[in-house]
Length: 123
Image (cartoon, rainbow, N blue to C red; front, side):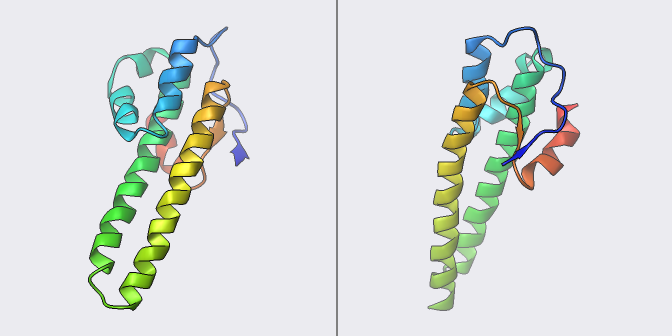
């Protein structure tokens, strides 16, 4: 985990409801999509920050899943690579749960690789 150098301007106090919504975006990708597109993320920078990171994390998972489906048709080598991609996807899901806990604690952090892409949409 890489701590964000300067977090976006924080509101005086984060509501538990907004922390919960932002946290749910990590393990449940559809929540991240909804939050990124709804007005709540425009009003609350904390929710917007985490919604976009979670959304791009889940886009990464979807791309890996599609790659896994394509590679799985190759005998033996494809199956081995597919198994490794499957393990990676399980690891990402476990990481998403950890990120959800950190988000509910009110922390700002940068998800490796994903943050670089998502920060364009956070502004």
